[in-house]
Image (cartoon, rainbow, N blue to C red):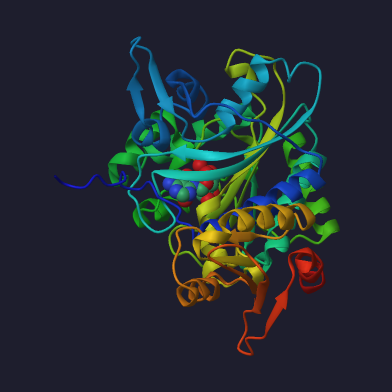
Length: 424
Ligand code: ATP
Ligand code: MG
């Protein structure tokens, strides 16, 4: 029978890679806690309508990338392609958006039926941050400072570039969309099929087109900054002053529109030139109308999501990992002979109680002295305790696992003291 394989684009993370993931997750948790953001968890499956109404019907995600299916009741459900919609839904449903502010984060898998390649998968992990109830630019600046802080903590600062834009209010977007459509209709024949289709329903997305002919036409198109309201323009200035004030460099990119319909006001993207075509590491922006659009309170919102696989790739490829990250064993307890098994278990328990931070691997599965010592070396542990005996245990040998191979003999009561001195 043929072996069953994982679904294309959905990755297993093997034990030699999980330490990198754990390091990244821990760094993010510490960062978010330092900014007093709270974690929220919500399902990976939602009603399809939630994503259609928030992300937008005429977007790549909803048109081509969603995993949508009917459940046994005949309801249309989808695996979440991103987190903002579910986060807003959950916060609204439980009254977290009523007359209050929230600073929230989440972490977990997202699903998009894309063409798998390096840095682009069908199941991928995002960490997302969403702030509700704050229409001001201070929270926008805080989100950018927080993300910048993460790159610093990970040692990736020099490899990431921040691009920002302001799409104006929802009304400004409509005005600009109309002007852009008017202009592009004059050049309709030259536009490719995708862009022609977007003309009616999502004209701003044409700005993102990779087609060189389209980009050529766009050079003569009406420009976004001429259409955004005075208030939006002023907010954008204030944000830029804040970024300069805290020393975060950025590029203003008027062509940055983002692929999701719910954005207005600020949009931004952190990109890298180290991952080929998969340049976007973290993206976000403001989505003030979204909760109302989903039938809830009219609450301002702003947030971002980052792609964890892309960060793992950067950390690995640029070698930005703390030295101790690969090691997961400190002490190896070899158990030679059948007479000492119970003593080994008791001693392991004592050591774990006295030295709770120590990672103690107790050998299971038998084997001769030499083969167990080999495994102890291979484990990366710094020292091994060797318990030997067919009837009972008389003494314990401690072997320091370096080239000198120093061995000491200890009595059972002194083991914990010796280890405490050795490891602290
Ligand atoms: P891209 O331009 O690479 O398609 P996107 O604009 O679709 O990215 P968002 O929807 O803004 O991305 O998601 C936020 C982040 O999630 C991205 O910046 C990226 O790091 C990551 N991401 C998005 N899609 C994938 C994917 N299929 N596989 C891995 N990471 C992804
Ligand atoms: Mg995409």
